[in-house]
Image 1: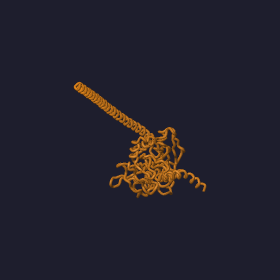
Image 2 (image 1 turned 90 degrees about the vertical axis):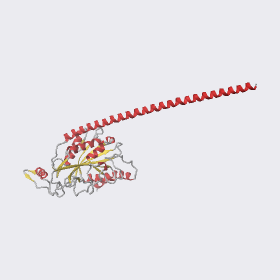
Image 3 (image 1 turned 60 degrees about the vertical axis):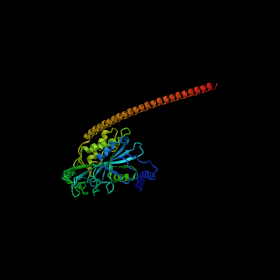
Image 4 (image 1 turned 45 degrees about the vertical axis):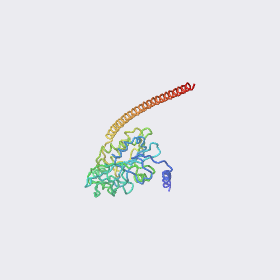
Amino acid sequence: MALNKRTMFKKLPRFLRRVVRVLGMAPEAPKIRGLFTEYRLPAFLSSSVEPWYDNIRDNPVTSDCRVVSVGWYKKQNGVEHEFLRFDVSSPDKVHTSIVIAERGGGDRNQTGTLQVYAAQATDTIAPIDTMAGPSSPPDVPTPPFASPDATGDSTASSADESSAHIIDKAAKTNGKTKRKSRRPAPISSFSSSTQRGAHDLVSYATLDSGASAQLERKCTKAARVCALTFSEKAMPTANELATLLYVTSKHEPTYSVTNTQCYWFVETVFEALKVLFTGAEQDTASHRGGTWNRVPIRTKESVEEVCAKYRAARAALEEEMEQKRRVERQQEEERRREREQRQAAEERAQAAEETARREREQRQAAEEEIAKLRRELEASRRGEASA
């Protein structure tokens, strides 16, 4: 009973905030595509990492959105899929966006198009964001799998030999090999092929909206094994986060069940954040991340290489942005010169018009004076004639 009360009081502030949103008493969420959604939107939006990155990087406002915290989440059953949750604040720090990044596998169907199975908090896939463009995968029904890792050949009844070898080898104790876990085969959904194209997905919604409830439910059903917070002066921007997710995804575009699966993606991004942003604090030193059934799963060591690629990408992006700023300054300078030239021409035209006006006035005054003298002369002549 006490636990239920604590849970109720914990959820009360969130409930009150949602009531305020529903009643229209709170300010609308910022219109920042790729991060914030409208409160009335019923479902969160999803996109592959690359088009999401392209959209974020081209929006300068995203450099004012800060990553407040990072959560490392792990599902409790099946393949124990792992994903990352980022809480991103708006530029005015009034609103928060939930961004979830995860890696899944995709396989080629008979027509050659990429089939993507992205598990969501519900049994149906969320709408793919239109920003994804033609390069994003088609919207397909969610298969009966537990996570994005459970993709490919759904008829496979057991793990591939290499993944089974890893688990069996790690399960040896006191010179004896334990039998396989009695739990349902967690990697039974893996394709018989250990490698296929990776599908790195980003899902997002504005916190306290109907759409974010689905993402929060996804997190609630999983366990947060670790969290990362940042100092006020060293918080990553949404733009920097997008760059890191992009270079990580590009660094290993192939999904391998043995070393570049969702565990690799989550660990690489999480550890890279700690390296790249000074002052990042991890809440616990040891956790269950990167394990299945508490058995460590081997992943490829890529943090150092990803950090190097991140720095190169940021430098290239900064150079690109500086080039854009130079072009904009040149264009602005040209527009300024054109305005000045136009203004000077208008001033010359006005001066010429003023000169012409004065000449007309002088000419008119002279004509009036001449007419006056003529009238006086005519009057004088008439007076002399009458005398």
